[in-house]
Image (cartoon, rainbow, N blue to C red; front, side):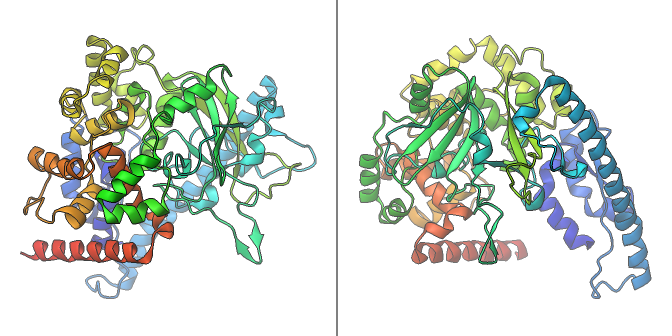
Length: 526
C-alpha cells in the first residue's frame, strides 16, 4: 500500500528477499520501492533466484493524501494487482487442498493409519480443512489456521507409558520459561481441552507469542531418537515418553535440563549482585540453560541468522524431514474444531529426529536452497565439511570440556555462517560454557539501560571490542554462571512475559524503548 507500506514490508520481510523467496514486481513503482533490498538480494544470490519466487507488487496508496493519482487509477491498480489474482489464487488453493486431502486419505487407508486419528463415520469435516501438517505453521498471526496439538489427543498415543515425575520444584525448573524462549526450536505447545471454547461468552486463547509461552503447561517435541511430552504442574515437572526406548529416558531429560546444577543458590547470588534482577527472579523462577546436542544446536543457530522463530522452526522441521529419521505422527486439529471425541482429528504432524553428520553427507547447496534455507545453504554445506574434517561431533565434545569460553568462541567462528553471537549461543546452549554471553538487541538494551549507558560510545554497529565489552558487563557483575543470569534477564524482555512483571519494571522498559526510538529519529534527521 504505497511507498510507506513498501518500506514497512521490507523491514519485516527482508530475509525473504535475501533468501530469494520473494522478488519485486516488474512494474515501475515496485522496482523503485524495492530497489535497495533487491540489489542486496542479487548479491546474496549470485546464481539467480528460485523459479517459484513470489512477486511483491507495491500499489499506489489508497490515502487521499496521495493525490498524484485519481481514485479510478488507484482502484484499477488494486483490482489488477491484488483482488483479481488474489481471488484466483484462493480458488486454486482450495482445489489443491481437496486433492491433497483425497491423496492423503487413500495413503492412510492403505497403511491402516486411521486408528491414530480416531476417525468416526458419524461425522466428517470439510475436505478443505483436512490437510496434513508436516511442521508448525510459520504464520502465528493467522490463529484460525494454526494446527493445534491437544493434550487429550496425545494421551491416546503410547497409553501404556505413564507420566513420570522429575521431582524438581518450580524454583529449580519451569519449562514455560525455558523451552520456548529462543534456546531451542524443537518444542511445540500442547493445548488443553478448554482451548478455543467459550466461558461466559469469552473465548479462551493461550498467551502465546513467537517468543515464549509463559502460561503454557505442556509441550511435545523430539530429542534424539525419542519423542517426549513435558508437563509443568504447580509443584513439579513431569514427562511422558511417546516414542523411543524407555531405558534411560529420565536420565536423558535430567541431562538435557542440566538438573545436576542447583538453580536456587545461583538466583540468590545474582539477586545480591543486581537489585533489578532480584525483582525479575521473584516473578520468573526456574529459567535454566539447556544442554543440547551440539551438532543440532550448531546447525539450528546457523539457520537462525536474520530470521524469526516461526520461520526458523518451519525451516528446521523441513531439515529434519529431509535428512532425519521418521519417529512418529501426532494428531493435530485446526483451531475452531468442536473437539468432540467422535469427530476426526483434522490431520497429523510427522516428527523426525535431527539429522546426524553422516546423514547430511549427501546434502548439497541447491537441495538446501529448495527447502527454503536460502543463503544459509552454503553455510550448512561448508560447516558440515569442516566439522567432518576436524573430527565431527568429537571435535565439539572437546570444546565442551574446555574452561575458556572465549577460546571456544574463537574456535566456533572459524565455521561458515557462525559469527560471535551464534558462536556464544552454541557455546552456552550446548557446550556448557556458562559464562558465554550472546549479544543481540535485547542484550544491548539491558547493557545500555541498566549497566553502562556509554558502552556503545556512539557506535552504529557492534564491533568485536564492543561485543566483548557488553559481555564483560555481565561477567563482571555475575561471577558465577553469568550466561544463565543473562538468559533470565533476556527472558524478562520478551513480550509474552510482560504479564508477570511488576509495573515499575514495565515502565522502565517502555520509557527506555521510547528514548531509543526518539534517539534514532534524531540521528536519522541529522
